[in-house]
Length: 63
Image 1 (tube, rainbow, N blue to C red):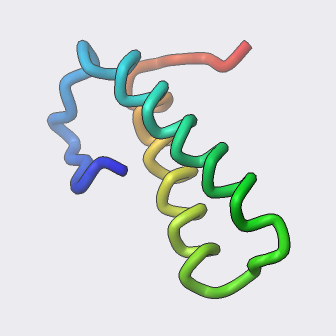
Image 2 (image 1 turned 180 degrees about the vertical axis):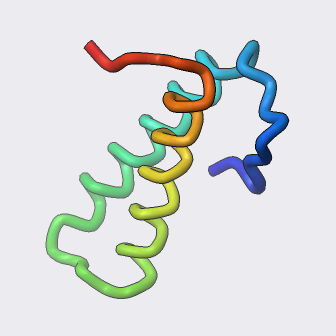
């Protein structure tokens, strides 16, 4: 998970960062199928928010 995303995020890193974030999210979802704890949900929300931030900031459209 990326520590901090700022408005001056460098979109040249978007490909690698999105790949890493999506892998982390997939692992989290797979390993926490029955775990609906606040900590898991918070981590999932943060990963999803980071993915959406990068996609919006860098004008990346999901296929």
